[in-house]
Amino acid sequence: MAVEKKTSKVSLVFGVILVLIGLVILLDKLGVVYLSWKKILSILLVIAGAYLGYSGFGLNSNSKVFWGSILFFFGIYLFIDSFGFLNPDVHFFWPVVLITTGLAFLMSFVNRPNDFALLLPAVALVGIGVLFLLTNLGVIYSFEVWESVEKFWPVLLIILGLYLILKKR
Image (cartoon, rainbow, N blue to C red; front, side, top):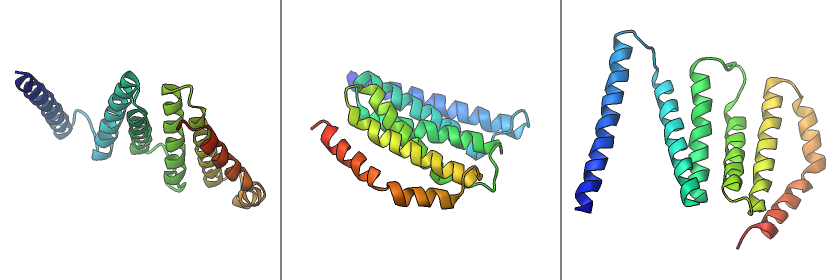
């Protein structure tokens, strides 16, 4: 009986998804709305990420929170990019990957606030991502960045060491 209930629920969800996809494609064909595949993919990533992250918070599962956050934040980036708001001459992809991964670590910390070791990669990745983004936007010059990296790279060793010391075993 439990198997029938689960099969019925899966077919209901799959049926609703097919109806929604069909409606969106029909509205696009009729010219009512314009949705590119990039927009559709970004919306699906945001929904899947939000669901996965939310269910991870309920189950106290850091892996679901982490991967749900990755999907959610990357979906938001793709959604913004699909409208053409981002300058095509600026390389946003790698800074966004670093910032998204850092935010995923931050969300994992929010899920488990006692695990301070998660803050270290969160701050490091978001910081490096913002630094690269500012360099790509021309706010700071890459020469200044590399000069600072040459001087302060041992900080990464300190952060890695603190992460290994503080992480829960």
